[in-house]
Amino acid sequence: MTGAATVVTGLAHRIQILQESLAGKKRCRTLGKPSKELGDLQHRFEAARGYDIEHEAKSTLAGLGFKESGFRPAAPTSPAAG
Picture (tube, rainbow, N blue to C red):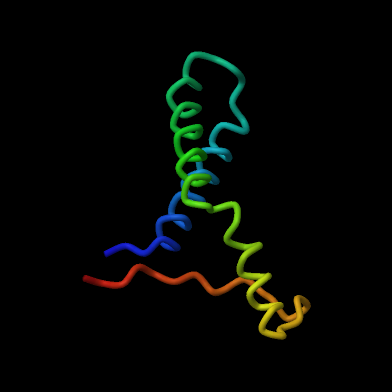
């Protein structure tokens, strides 16, 4: 079973790839499909509360007494085998 965090991370990664791919292209017919896919992915990311995760994590850690100066991104993990 895939966890919500894994789904959000996967969506964020795919969004980044599409954004980078589209960044160098000029407006033309070939942007239609990637642009639609990007919009769909952004909608799914928002529905999964992907934009809220970092804020909620910081709020939780601060509530537990951790200082924000000590926060750092977690190391990437690979999906569990199974």
